[in-house]
Amino acid sequence: MGERKQSADLSVEIATAIREAIIEGRLIVDERLPSEAELSEEFSVSRPTVREALKRLAAQNLIRTKRGASGGAFVNRLSFEEARGDLITTSTLLLSMNEVDFDTACEARFTLERACAPLSAERRSADHLATMRAEITRQGQAGLSDESFCASDVAFHRAFVDGAGNPVLSWQLAAAVEAIEPLMNMITYSQRDRTQVIALHTEIANAIERQDGLAADRALIRLSAYTQELARKAMELRKKR
Amino acid sequence: MGERKQSADLSVEIATAIREAIIEGRLIVDERLPSEAELSEEFSVSRPTVREALKRLAAQNLIRTKRGASGGAFVNRLSFEEARGDLITTSTLLLSMNEVDFDTACEARFTLERACAPLSAERRSADHLATMRAEITRQGQAGLSDESFCASDVAFHRAFVDGAGNPVLSWQLAAAVEAIEPLMNMITYSQRDRTQVIALHTEIANAIERQDGLAADRALIRLSAYTQELARKAMELRKKR
DNA sequence: TTTTTTTAAATGTCTGACAATTGAAAGATT
DNA sequence: AATCTTTCAATTGTCAGACATTTAAAAAAA
Image (cartoon, rainbow over all chains, first blue to last red; front, side):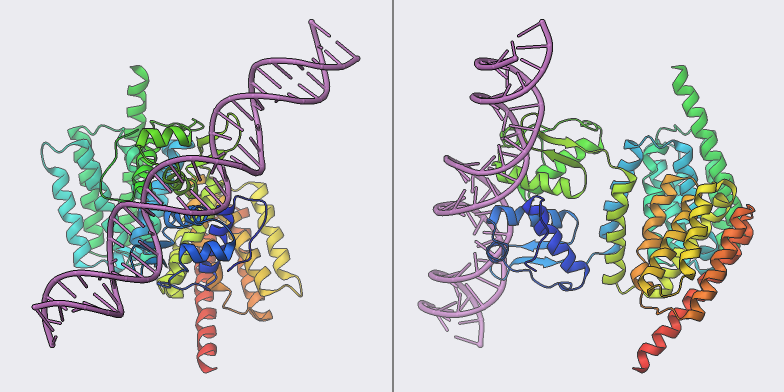
């Protein structure tokens, strides 16, 4: 593991070397890395430098550390669940820092989500359908805050995507669906808006129930159009003030 | 910025506090963070601990550091290009560490890619089309290694996706298309295989040229089926040995 | 045999120092 | 006055050594 490239910070070099070892399979899941003292020997650097390198890897969920005897740094099994959070954070920041307009983000989101419709319709389980129905019910409750409405909306669509039964798809769509939530929160849903959204959600759930992918797709298209219309109105309202 | 949650490693707490500040917009792009010395004062920890926290953030591309007078740590503008590499790495590791079978990964990939077909057909520029044609030409060259063929395959599909003209979609699809490349490399493309793949690529390019999204979708479906068939054959061959 | 104590190994944290880099200020030169 | 050179101070990068804390295993005691 000891070779390393030149002309970068030492902690970057070391982190890169170990990362490569993990990616190339020379370090396998749950394998223990040498101790910090041993690594500092191996790379001929001080322990603080090794530690900075390990923190870089820990930030990417590539390793986990445990204290005590028989502790140390271990190669972490990257789980979809773990990676999901990071992906959402990254997506959120990408959208907010690059001034991606709502239409673009919305288009990406519904384009990807619509792609799941045929699979979800074919494979949906009773469990996913029940979640979708439950969220629709929640969305109809009086006194629900806009934030809670949005959160329920996210949960609904996540159940829809999970219904496709493909963990890779679910993982990817998490970013598309959830990262856009902060953008949606700028829409303040009136009672009438909610009724419309709930109607479309119900339409989607019904289509999924009878395994009609095309109908689900059509409902998603209309939901997409309606979402963009709401956003446009919210924008105009904001401009006036 | 000084408040922090309890009962975790100090460097984690500090990294989390700063990360929150960035996400919530209290620290904006290109703003300079306090110096390490000031941060260690602010959080009442030593400088090495602050540094470990900053390395965590640097590993997530949230900050960049510069030495010297008027140096320091600055909030980094997360670019799609920067984030793409990390996303591909994460996806690759997720696939390899979670024993995702080829069919699942392949299904996710083509499901997402097919979703781009209508947009790509509608918006494709001469530039994207030229890239696709160029990659097809390269794929036909004699003596091309399997690795280079795969790389060209990736470039072709990336041009296809970029043709949709939606940076968010392009970013998301990078993971789907590129992370699966290592899996595809287990297929050793015979001359006959390549001819078939090139024919389908040509079909896709032609469909995009005449802005026929449906035809592009149909060709993608057949490419998906053919890819899975090749993988199945490669699997069987591997079993026999 | 079971429970308690000790011990050693490992990460987490601190202190203090020096090296390297870099922009800006001060000074020297034309 | 303008320009080049030198010095300086601020900041990150690195190092050495120490102590604190946690943890599992070994040793000792019951």
